[in-house]
Image (cartoon, rainbow over all chains, first blue to last red; front, top):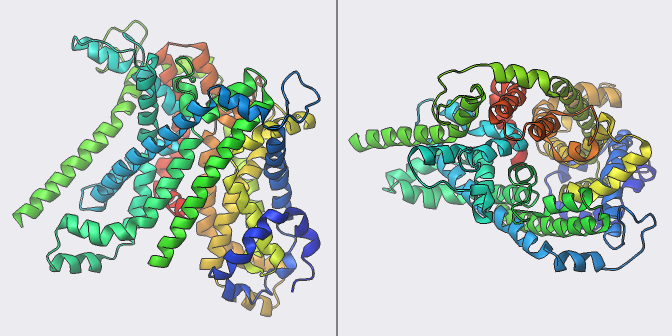
Length: 324
Length: 274
């Protein structure tokens, strides 16, 4: 069909993509237009620069990362040897198990809170509230700021007795002060609160976009039929928000699994390594200990987690699209 | 009618109360940053001796001034690189039905699933071998590759769903060359999605800490988050001074956000949905 193309893109298309390609794209709405194909065909070489940088920065290093996870590569090991799954065994004999569970736990807590708050705010600010655009702008604002900076802000707020913001308040009211970040349970909830404060705005904005897709006539019709606010929400609005919920859940979960900046700035993984997540653990294995192979093994675990979540998202979204 | 007015008033009260709760951390941030050393006003009350001294000290003793410039350069170059290459790549990928084109598109999409953490160690050693460690070029190359899949995905989807091929065909019939058609017909039609891409990439790169932490460690050319990290390390518990540096670091991005807030919010909602 396209005689000029093969030489160029063959390099960038190893088997993986082809496996996907068979089933999916025919269904996409591109088919009709793409059939006409002549436009853009002679620009077949246009993807080459993007493909080169992508191969060099993403594909090759990721493949090498997977390979190194099966070797004894480390700071002092100049000539890494294949050691099978030893790195994975070592990681999980260490604290990789609890770390992975903690990472998932934080991600779930963050996602649930963000979405409950985000949906509530979206419903409020979709209604007749004075100056609602200003309120939206304010609530979304933390989202554009660096997570590291937000982390330091919350590190002070929940800082040690006599120093931290909350503790000076407790002191002023004559209450017992708490060493929040010295206690792993408190510390984890503070990390969750920090992330939720920063990213609730993003979840709200996605819900707002979803709410704009709810036809006003539909809601009015339901209201005329005597449906109250909650009934209308449950039977009219909620089903139409389903894709927004899926997107929010998945962005939040995948982002939550990769959490790094906030933990790095608030607790540095402490106390006693009890707030480490996969990303911070991986960083310390690499930079403090030079265990490159073990760090790579942890990254593979993270990749599998992200892959599982993404495939769930993909199948759920497709089912929702078929239903609507 | 009366109950409706009551609900409306209630919604207003709840919305404003929620926003005020949201702003408490910002109040704490600004309030503390204005506090001179040795001020004994309790931390949550407005200081009686508010001063801008911390800002002056933070500005003159931290690496912030230079790092703002570095961040501007890195963000601009990386975003433009990604935008240009992704637009070029997306066009044939969206318009061609060849199996290889489809395969290429899906190969790019695989990148959406690969966390950067997996690639980071091997890239680190690739950059070391190129002698680029500690330079902003390592960052620009890394961002170029890492941000590419998402941008290509957004632009390709937009081309397929919202840009009819008829314009290009008409231009073709009128004798317009391929590259001119691309530049004068296709690219202008892509403006909305290019805006979304630019915003998402630029905000992500501007705020990124993990990548510079690894590639610029020990370098004198650092981005804003690195400057903040170093400054905090230096003044461990001098919170008023640290907070002044945090506020300074937030000003550029917040200013841009407030200027373009409608586009930024729309861009986020549109991009994340896509």
